[in-house]
Picture (cartoon, helix red, strand yellow):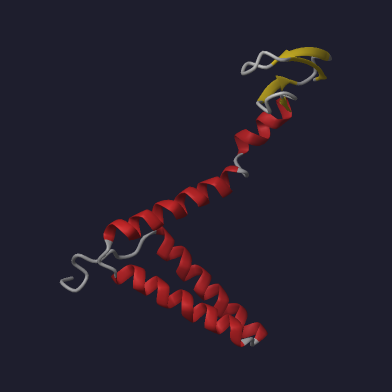
Length: 124
């Protein structure tokens, strides 16, 4: 416990890196390529470097950036987005590019952009 005091330890990014490392090693068993073995070894070295690092602020910033990227990637697959997509059309304003959400099934409607007040007609 004394050895790890003041060191960063494991976090979500470290766990992800270890999973990628083991995946590379598993793929290396089937393909036998040297590149995957070297890649897995490099990932493992970086992962242990992060775990034993004393620069807590930098490691935390790296982990926060990983979590933001992970959330951005996973937000594409969220259920609410798919449900909303079925109920609404998303149009872009031709003048300013603002995205506007319009309910489906209303026929041709005149849309007023809330940002630039431009009016345009679209089919919902």
